[in-house]
Every structure is written in C-alpha cells, then in structure tokens.
Image (cartoon, rainbow, N blue to C red; front, side, top):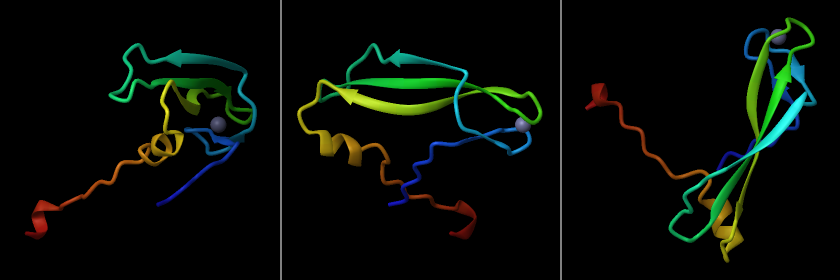
Length: 88
Ligand SMILES: [Zn+2]
C-alpha cells in the first residue's frame, strides 16, 4: 500500500514547495460514518513564495469517535480495481 506522508506542499502552478500554511482551519464532517466516527479534516491555505499562487490543501484527516483506530487507518485508502475496457 503506498504511503506518502510529507510535510511539504507543492505549488500546483510552478511546483515549488511550501512548508508552512499561512492559515489553517478545520472541517468537521456533519455525517458520521457507519462506525460512528466523525472525520475532522485540517485544511491549510498556502501561498507560493515563487509565483504567488494561492491554494488550499488537506493537511491531515482525523477520525474521532470510533473504537478501532487501526481500522480507520486502513480504510483511508480503499482497494480499487481499475479495468481498462479497451483491453477486453
Ligand atoms: Zn508557485
């Protein structure tokens, strides 16, 4: 399972990395999942030092209220199968 955890965020325009958000806020999902967990998303606003591009990015997602934390982590990246119809 690919795991990519970086503390840097890349400018969508020029590719320069920004390390610190200029502003952060949290989004709380109003609907709990079927295990009763609520997802809290920490968002960050970034500004590129190089080109001045502003963008928002998800910094972290936290699930609260559930009992099985490990399960929550494994379910972050669902198993998907991609089928190319042209190859059938
Ligand atoms: Zn940039």
